Image (cartoon, rainbow, N blue to C red; front, side, top):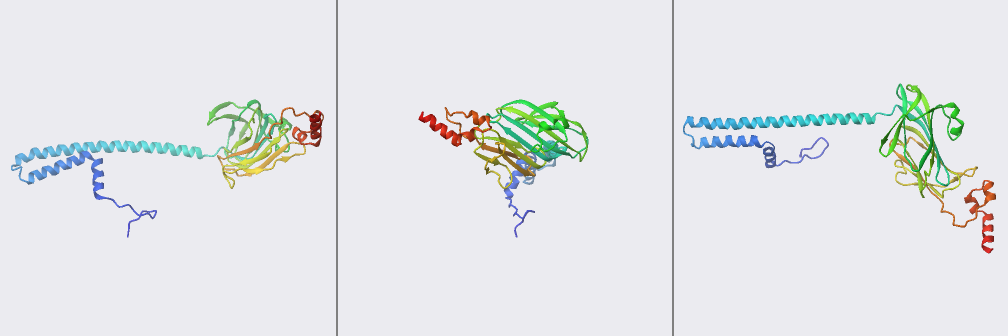
Length: 339
């Protein structure tokens, strides 16, 4: 019956000669001392030493060699012990770092709501609300981050008790919220982190809403283009809303790193609102920590040069896309060509 290890695998067979060779290689000085001792014993046994007086210097030499070998072996063991102690310290620091990284933030995000209002030229008005429930006592600040293209023209940060942004825009809630600002920034992995103080110290199980209102020029200049959200905090529900005003996407795709649709985009048909804007909306329960969720869309191709503008129709609120697909435009375009 073959020897097996604890995990059920068969133990590899050892070659005795290879074992001896590895021992000699690791303990060269000790091996030399043993060889000298064996040679001295054989030398004396063969009768080369016929007097006790001749044997004494030989034994003394053997003892000196053995003593030197033992001193060298002891130094080797001390160095190895020091190396293991250093490794133990490194492992301890690594374990401490892992424990720190595994420690959750002092709050849990009950609801994360992000709304993008995108203009046809790529400018955007972005509003994000996080409903925080604190898991520790004496929490006085949160960490905010931002990364994106374009030029950030205006940003407001508010704390307090807020209503869902879909129901009540942030402009209608400023009077009931407290303004705050970033007091310290530092870079981290391509984005800028900011330390934002709260309006007071919060204790465990209390809740507070944190709102960020940004306006950016040229945030979405590409075609196709996309909006991303990084899940860097424990979150129960993430709500994403993207609205396009006068340049409506032809196709919308949801990109996720985890879940049933991981690695493949989910296609959605654009939804037209009563106010003429196109909207995409989705709720994602329990997004995985560290996941990146993206909404990607295709812009329509630009209109050909010389396309007449519909001033009267646009004055009535008719979008450019509706005008280009309307019967009135086709009639006017035919009249222009015939003229």
